[in-house]
Length: 252
Ligand SMILES: NC(=O)c1ccc[n+]([C@@H]2O[C@H](COP(=O)([O-])OP(=O)(O)OC[C@H]3O[C@@H](n4cnc5c(N)ncnc54)[C@H](O)[C@@H]3O)[C@@H](O)[C@H]2O)c1
Image (tube, rainbow, N blue to C red; front, side):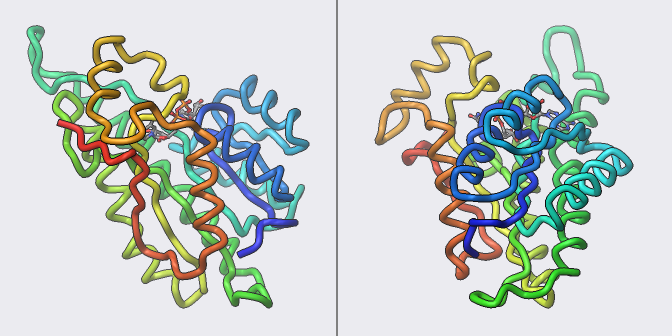
């Protein structure tokens, strides 16, 4: 799919990987709607790129329906959906205070797994109602954000690892189901990227992780994630798969 002139919705677009994607797609000519729960950040990014900022809590059906409806009214139905909304908040299942509160597990499941599914179901319905594009025959592309944690299973983050594995696992069945609508589905599994989410990591963990990356020995730049989004959008044979971008890192 070419990007010029396409309507795009990006959840978590107010920060980090989503903000970099919003900037990159806007610079490639897309009409970008920045969906985020944090409106100050979303407005900042939207103002910078000439897009629109829309309040959206991805865990809520009503909030997501309203935001995607407003994006549709402003830009037409989105043919590009990129889900970057997320929280880290990892913790041990059992620590010295006893078992983790179940609400912690439920919150991560809600934001990552329910949130991604929620946006995909609404975006895909809009895409399915579009005409196929004349050059590639596609109607749209859904891109979700997993994590290498979903494959490598680092300790101390059971729920985060599990929801990221689930997001990766959704790519193939979603691509198969949506193939009759000519909609592609991909996930990106980043290693460790320089975003506000990673800013909370302890320095000794950062040093250890950086050393463990075969090459290049640095954290990923959000712009590198955004370029992967562009590659997926412009390469029709990419479908039903999850791509790791991690410099070869395997987490322990
Ligand atoms: N940064 C990394 O190293 C890294 C690595 C692997 C995967 N990821 C994943 O990439 C995605 C983006 O992470 P990031 O590093 O850009 O984080 P970030 O904290 O910079 O951005 C996340 C954005 O999501 C928004 N958000 C949170 N909850 C939301 C909700 N309920 N509804 C709508 N928006 C919500 C936040 O307001 C924020 O703007 C996340 O899913 C994260 O798990 C990040």
